[in-house]
Image (cartoon, rainbow, N blue to C red; front, side, top):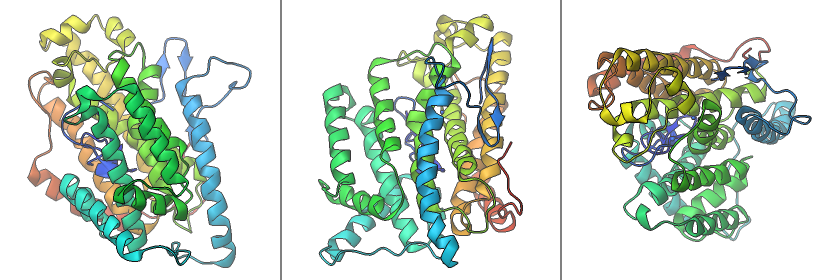
Length: 404
């Protein structure tokens, strides 16, 4: 399953559905829509608002966090370049969509409208949040959401059993074409136009496809470093795709990298939450998305998961996993307020709603084998005004910060 969280959820499971949820995700499918790790002798911690990054040139055996950070730096550099002229000219408005005079605006608007319809059907809460965005940003987010969902459907949809690595290669070639202005269909046209107007890099999109490839060949993860990379592929990428569109508040003093790392943290938090929620569902399909070394240290194995019996060992193990996911949510919170004012509500909504799934797992006495943790409609409705209040009252930091 994926977690399409457009900085938001999207996990495509619920997250392609949630920022893509946010780019959120749908219910069902393989796990994808990814804290710093503390594995034996290897400890990574947050420093200056980014994952600790050291020795990457001298040490070829780089951690997943270090590999992902390279993508963060590249995308952040693109956004910084876009912000410079705006800051210089004191132009605080988002970019206006323009064309070269040959664009068929009727068809393009129809393409964006179709993307909005898909978002409204599969990510209702997120869709509602996009209504507060400027029309240009709203349409762009819809286009990204739809691409993420279609990508997730390749391995989670009704035809998933027929998908091969070659099919994913063709999908990646099609991605390259739309980035070069050669869309294949209406949905591609909307995304092609979006990436031509915002500083969106192709790498996060290609990385999401790589996450789909992992689901075709991998059903176990030896340690959290491996799982982190998978979570980045299927969910953290959404944050990198969406921040350029959602925009960083002009008055924000936070570094661009720190905002991207917060977006990345939200994607990983959402995906880890998906994994913990769906342990039983995944086990019935022969999949275990929990770090094998951590299971072993807790005195557990895959067989314990397949038996599906809640024991004290399992409860203690789950407490540690939930604690890690919450730490990612805490890190994500630090960056939401740095986004443009019109983009904060859907992100806050995604964060608050998804974090409550962890509460629900606890309420079920850690039985994620036979019980599905979910947030009821009443709690969801109560969360929306809280998210809106946070979006309005909590603005960008007044001083330079790196979220250390």
